[in-house]
Image (cartoon, rainbow over all chains, first blue to last red):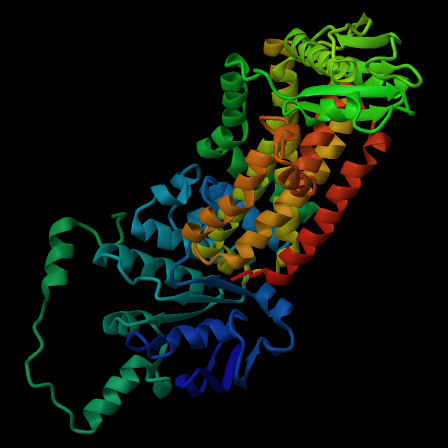
Length: 250
Length: 355
C-alpha cells in the first residue's frame, strides 16, 4: 500500500467539501477518483499533496504521515494541478531543468519530454503548445523528481478525444515504468478504460470503491438492465476512424 | 546556494526576454533624460544668496530685507563654508559683510559671484542693489550708493542634465522596484505559478531571495547604462565613484523592492496593483527633487518631502555624481534609507501572502 487515506475531512465554513473519505492505493496502480464537479475530488487531492491543511483524518504516503512530514512527502510525489501555469518566457527544456533544481536534481529534459512525446518541442514555450501538449507537458513537469506517486487532477478535461487518448497512452506508460498514478476525472469512459480501480465520489463522500469491471458486474448481478441496447459503435469511434490513429498527435 | 543561483539565473532570463521589462527599466528613463535634457527647464528658480560675517548687524537690516524678497533664499554661514557652497554651485551670490555693516555705514560690501549661473547672478545683483538703495534712502532720506566690490568665483559648471540624470536614475530604481515586483509577483500568484511551486520542496524564501537578487542585478545594469549614456551623450560630469553609486543604489533598491513586496501582499489582482503603486510612487516622483529642485517647494511641503525614501536616494546619488561625495559624508541619506528599508521589510513580511 503506497497511499492510505483515513477519515479525511474538509469544510469551508458551512460547506462540508470532503466528508470522512477513506481509500487506499496500491503500488503501480492507476487509481481514479470519479465524480461530478464540486464532489470534493480536488480538495481531497490537495490535502494529500500538502497544498491544503487537513481538517481531520490522516493521510499516510509511503509510510509517512503527510501532516507531520510534508517536505519528505513532497520529495516523493509529482503533482499536476488542475489549471497549471508555468513561468513565462522559459522554454520547456529550461522549465524542466529549473523544476528539477527545486528538488536538488539535475534532470535530463529530453528524456522527460520523450516520456510524454514532446521531445521535438524542447525549445517551445508553454503558451505555444496546444491544449493536449500543455497537459502532457505538465505531466512531464510532475515527473522531474522521479516520484513514486503522481497526482493528476482532471488531466483530460477540455481535451478533444484524440488528445485524451494520447494522454491515456502516456499515463499507462508511466505506470509501466513502476510509478503509481492517482487521477481525478468526471469522464465515465476514462475511468472505465484507464483506471485499475475507481472510487466514485459524490457530495464529499466516497460511495463505491472497486475495479470498474467489478462495479459494472455488481450492478448487472443486482438485476440491472440498461433500457436501450448498446450500439456497437458511437460517434467518437466514427471520428477516430475518419481522422486517423488515436495515438497520433492532434 | 546552488538553488538560489539557478533560480536567479532563470529569473534573469525571464526578465530579459520580456520586452516590456527592458522598456520600463532602461528605455523609459533614457527617454526621460533625452526629453528633459534637450528641453531646457533651467529657467529662473530661486536665487540662492549666502551671507557671511556682519554678526552685529542691526535687526531688520539688509539680510532681513533680502530674505523678504520672494525669489531669494538667504542662508547664513562662514565665509569659507559659503565659498564652498558657491563653488559647488549651490549659491549664486555670497555677501561678505564687514563688522557693524549697515546701508549707511559707508563700509564696503564684498560680493562673491557665481560664474556659472549668469542669469540668477544678475538677478540676484539687481535685487541686492535695489534693497541696498532702498535701505540707504530710508536711513538718509536721500539716495546714496553702498560701495560694492564684485569678485568672480569659478563654480563647477552644472547643467540641468547633471542635476537631472542622477534623479532619473533614482526614479528608475524606484519604479522597477515597486512596479516590477508588485506587478510581477501578483501575476505569478494569480496565474497559479506560486501554487505549483508550493508542491515542490522549494522554500518561499529561496524564491524571494532569487527575485531580489535578480532585481538588484538589473538595478546595477540601470546605473551603468544611465551613467554611461550621460557621460557619452550629455557630457555628464561624473565626479564620484561608481562603487559608491552602486552601494547607494542597492540600499535604495532594497527599500523599493520591499515596498513592491508590501504592495503585492495587500493587492489581490494585477488591477489593484497599479493604482496602489501609483499612490505610493507619484508623490515621490513629483516632489522628491527628481526633475526640479525641492528648494522651490513651499516650506511645509519641502519639509515633508525631506523624509521620502526617493529624496534620500536622489540626493545621495546626485551628491555622488555631481560633487564626488563619498559614502561617509552621505550618512544622513544612508541612515534615512536604512531606516526606510527596515520599516518596509517589516511591513512586507507582515502582509506577505504566497497564495
